[in-house]
Image (cartoon, rainbow, N blue to C red; front, side, top):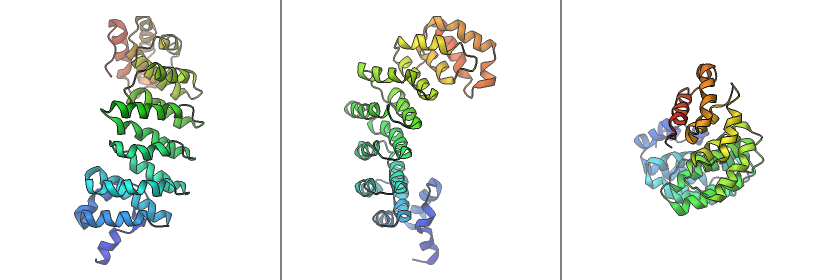
Length: 271
């Protein structure tokens, strides 16, 4: 291999995930050569090299099935690594795959010591159970456990994932989400409100009747109103419109118009 070609497979180039650079490698060097090198890097004792291998395999496996097997082989190696940078790279590598085979690895990472790893696990789990009822139940159980995580961002992602991305509606899931309606992190409480409103849970009406009185109410509560489609919310939404909420507070201004239409007609916003 020439020096130029060898330089393209220097692990120091892949400390972060640049998909454009990684996706170009198979055209330049050949897919099997790149996969073989990445698999070897994963077994390296050096954290930088191991992380580079995981970054490569995670991206390559999205387009090249041949990269998926070595990615699965890497899971027990990286999960057990004491260095958080390696475990974080694994979580990122697994979290983009809509494949149930990565679910056990992500499940292990839901209890990782590092919050950033747990966030990636929560974000990745719903993709592993699309059109898989049994898988959705398994993922829902994992996410329910994460709702009580001590880290604000983990709870936020877990609430969003369970409430919006996982299509499970059971009394247990509703009760778990209802506990988050008063979460200390406002965004998490808002995600829980959206999740329950999507399920037309009547407990969200009282929450929204109070939250929508605030002219600076967050967009999640307006979105929840569109899902609940409760006519009692209409005066509050119209008042937000009059107060120009859309131009002063909201990067998604269409939500208010959708909520007004839904509450006026009683027809909820579609999921």
